[in-house]
Image (cartoon, rainbow, N blue to C red; front, side):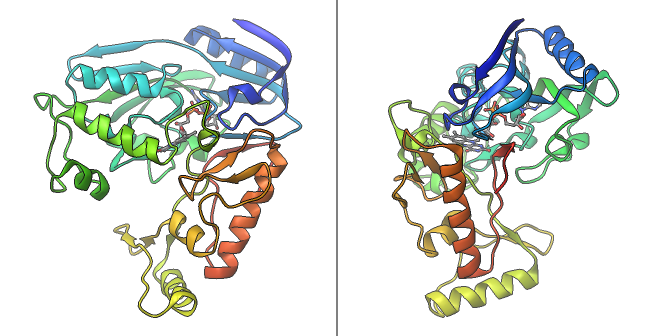
Length: 351
Ligand SMILES: Cc1cc2nc3c(=O)[nH]c(=O)nc-3n(C[C@H](O)[C@H](O)[C@H](O)COP(=O)(O)OP(=O)(O)OC[C@H]3O[C@@H](n4cnc5c(N)ncnc54)[C@H](O)[C@@H]3O)c2cc1C
């Protein structure tokens, strides 16, 4: 177990933002993770779990406590059952499942960060979410002071949410189990219209899993959604805001505001969620409120490749980023009456 004091956290995040941690511990085994968590809890020290730092906004003042970096390793494939240690690199793990000819997570290629963080916000992209393939999450329960195994149903997965996100100070994910599919080298049915269009297939068709993965990686790279240290458009947390989910009444009011502002023939993107509510597109409302690609004059700007990514152009502080995020949130609320909610986890700061 490695331990540093007054250690910079910015290099551990994809935003490259945030101050120092009073203490930074790197754990390479589950036992080390549990020991570090128990030690922090026993002394009443605040604890921040860090995987790949790709969904974290850390305040400029840093973190007055123990930051615990999960660096455990383990890729265990038994037939179609996959168990990943929390510290495994997610995108590399996806590539290995595709190489093994398995389907189920190929469209989640290119999502940065660790395997252990994937259940936290039920990561998803291009028609797949980890909740569709996760069978169990093995976690250290800080409240019960023991290692527990949670079934998929017990994880309470929903859009960018889970039991782990609901109780942020309770669980430390140690291992994640997935049930993949052996479809003779083919992908899971392609669900996302853009992927189907680029592949030249109908939604619901299957293609070679490797082709699906490569197509998604190309689409993502074009939007600055694959990490590239040379490209400031990727110094982000991916999508900064979640897609708003509106009740029937909220949706009606929203459509009225869209018509007032943009004309009666304009309809916003609308995806029924099956419970009477409607999901619309955060990227669309941001763009239509006037915050287009590249927006901003300062060191934090909207990505030149995707309206939904706020980025550090190199010299930003967390306060610069938050000022931009507040401007976008307030502008969208003034234009359409919809309040955007941040997707990344805030540490020591708020919008
Ligand atoms: C360029 C880019 C593209 C992205 N695209 C997508 C996308 O398409 N879809 C999507 O869903 N997300 C996307 N993201 C967001 C991010 O990659 C995911 O949320 C990812 O799962 C975060 O993993 P991480 O290891 O970096 O987590 P971190 O940023 O290190 O942590 C995020 C949160 O999870 C907690 N956490 C991390 N590990 C554990 C653990 N083992 N146990 C308990 N808590 C833990 C942290 O405390 C924190 O609260 C993108 C980010 C970037 C930078």
